[in-house]
Image (cartoon, rainbow, N blue to C red):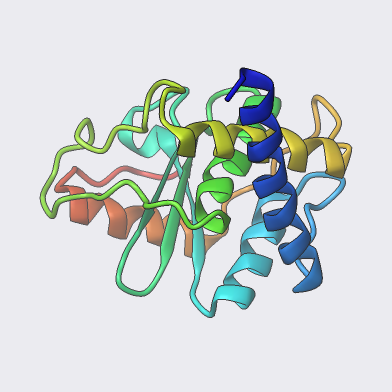
Length: 173
């Protein structure tokens, strides 16, 4: 199989997943609104999808998707550029909608323990990256668009995730 064949297969999988979302009434918001997209996914999945600020764990550029018993958590790099944040959230949502395994978090793990997957040797990473790019292009997201702010529910979810990780509480601005 050539590199081109592999790309075509990945794009086919991604296109099918995004089409399934559209059939279920979930579209990538334009202009970009991470909270609205997470709310739509939550309604479809029947469980909350919380946005958690990566700064809560001292992260600047990392994104992550993990799942609890009753909710999904997408950690976003809230101190990076709006474009990077949008792409990272779409990448993690790609993992979720493509049926990939989430990053597991052991109870009491420190903030450095759950690290995002690194490298593109993993086919799931290639699919999630392709998904993020395709979804972003479909939404015609504009560079410099304002990224939605955290809701009180998202801040509470971040604090609950911090308890799971055994980290100290922070004061929210």
